[in-house]
Length: 209
Image (cartoon, rainbow, N blue to C red; front, side, top):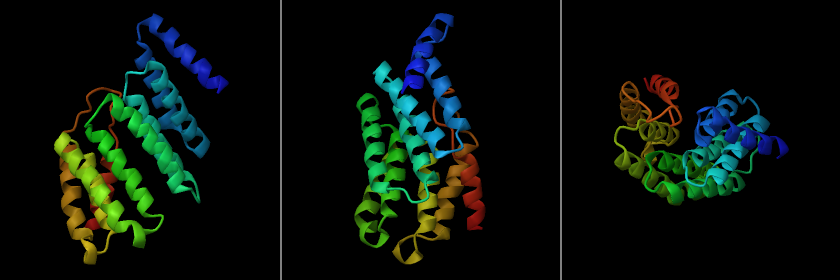
């Protein structure tokens, strides 16, 4: 916590050099986020982003990255408590949504955390949680038709489902083709906006061939 406090102090001092507190915080946070190779490092990035969001109070992106970093940290754990992690992630998403309602990227995070919860008990949770995940993807597409990530997430999800319940490679292929096509022309709104997924989409599409 002491190191985070010092980092937050430094980010406000950075504004003196021409960068806003938001820019300074995002630069520092994204450096941690991109360089993290352990659970501890990724969780530290998540904590830093949340502190930036709580300090600035009017920016959704720090909470977005806090949630996404928590998702990535959870995936690094051998036997994670996915429901407990989902509570933390959903709380961060709620903070972001309070500042940026009806956002495609936040709907994508909702789909990710919901599908993570499905894997706790697929047989029991698939139908109810699956509907929530599908709704999140539909909202993500509608809110920003140019965003490739909803199609990537949809494709990966369909690959994990048997054909007998509406999944399979053939259906996944269509979504992944759309994702790759959109990634070819996708430009994030700023250097701080989400820009991940192209390599994952290409690999997933290749697995469908």
